[in-house]
Image 1 (tube, rainbow over the protein chains, first blue to last red):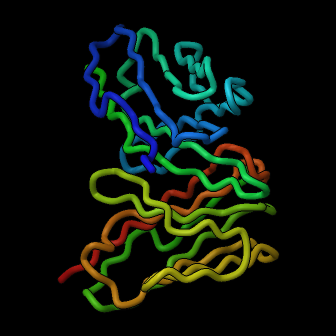
Image 2 (spheres, chains in turn yellow, brown):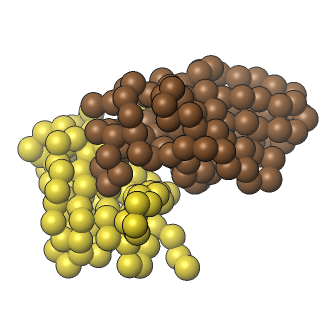
Image 3 (cartoon, chains in turn orange, brown):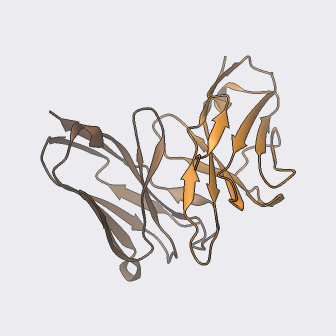
Length: 115
Length: 111
């Protein structure tokens, strides 16, 4: 079946603009995760949903970052009043959560450049 | 949260060589994943290996959970193996958490 998809793949925003990044998880996957990957670094956890419930948002770097998954499927990560330090690749992952298996599968990412 | 360290940070090999990448983690975990990030940035799942040994073609992985490390073996390297290899574990050790990644091993395979 199809993997995790993300859109847009590339986004250029002027400092101060709001952006919205979309993630379509693998069909039937219960859990959805957002990560931020700076250049030359490993991904860093931002937030996690189980179905529509946001269970952990401890990694969101500021209150300008907001995520939602209203129907337990597609998720949107919104960044308000973008700053240059928000420039990064934003990765989405989903997980089936079957039994004791929690393998995460990643989308191709959205590369955000704030100018 | 759990800390993850990977070594070596960089590795340059000739095509056909074998390599071993190491991942150490600071506390007990009940899952561990190895990924290959290709030059286009896609994270490709290699292994989901909380313990034991698994093999997939030229790649194999071993996790010794009691000693808090995992090893990824690549045999008969090909240029397409180039990229960054990440190890990741749940940040609190539990299964359903977000993952904490190491800094990765940047592997270059020269023809």
